[in-house]
Length: 162
Image (tube, rainbow, N blue to C red; front, side):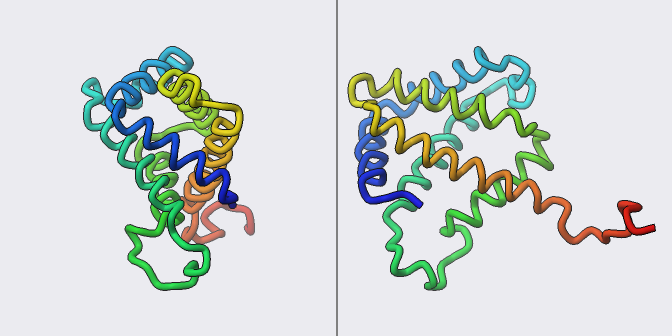
């Protein structure tokens, strides 16, 4: 979990990203494809929709930081549950888009580079550490979601128990 200081760093730095969100999305994908050009084929030629999805997802993550921990056991809409949304995103990345596990490192590096470029001096060591923490939580959850792709399949189909 994130502590209140980390949440503050994420919220405050996100407010600085919002006015430059289109530029930030451009920077992110440019850097991702510089780091790992092999992943370019996983994306459509026109990245406009993908860029919007990136910003929308990051905004959703930042908004979820405001969810009061005291309310964790309250019933909420599935589409508002960050954990469920990120699990499903991980499953889609694995099953639909065939994103390999090693891609998460490149995406994380591209995100940190983008924040560094976009925020400049405001991207302090503490802000960087908070974003790394958030990204690692997202990465772990997405990987959990990718593991769910084999759930529900009979064990005997694997031939392990014959």
